[in-house]
Image 1 (cartoon, protein in one colour):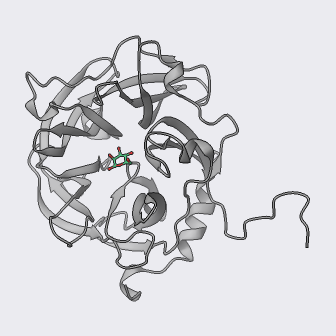
Image 2: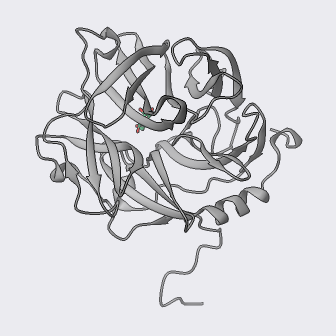
Length: 327
Ligand code: BMA
């Protein structure tokens, strides 16, 4: 049968690309930038604030604030880097700072950013705090290398803060999402593997990592994570979902077997690193229940996709509880 238009994809599409994509590129920048991608995101009053990773022509990254009323267009971008590496005071930032995840932590009245500090010994997790995205105070490195893809939960469990992150072990043990706890955001312990990379042919075999920070919903903490498939043609970064128990985030309630978002468009395939969709931020718009997902395309530009929270949770209800499924 001939199709006049593209035939429908029979898989459910939860996340829909915005027609204006890519919403930000290096050409929008007020100062020289090689690429702009992998932004943290949050809503501050009636503005969307992005903390965008900007890579320069040395290959080093810093973070710069972009603000917009509609979260899509008319971005006002800081004229100089908003959060730049300071290797003289913070040697772990020798080769730049990357991929911020933003969490409003109620009991501190601050945004906590978890970012990758690229040290001479490898990438590690550092935390910093800000109340206004103008001044930032560092809490310092909290996980040794190699570790990245971290985000803090917005509230404490008992009297402890919690953080998701992704250490990498040597050999063939895989790179999994871990959960750790802290009394003060500086000292972390009680580490445990939370979500394992699968093995073999799976789309999320061997290496996974957290995307945006966990999102609190009535049914649990919503998790979006990337899975990295190593193929003969290079790596493929795709996204899957999980749900954690609201009061005990050590309990994984659901995990999608299938990926829910994957590189398809030119701006996701063509760039410095092709076939990459890499979200670091999402915003839930109340009361309409729409999620705005901000993601890097091919390590080169910034794009936006939207989803209905009710659709995402509905999909997760059809997904297995992890312990009942064979790997
Ligand atoms: C990961 C991170 C991301 C990047 C991705 C694809 O390891 O470094 O910043 O987008 O690789 O290159």
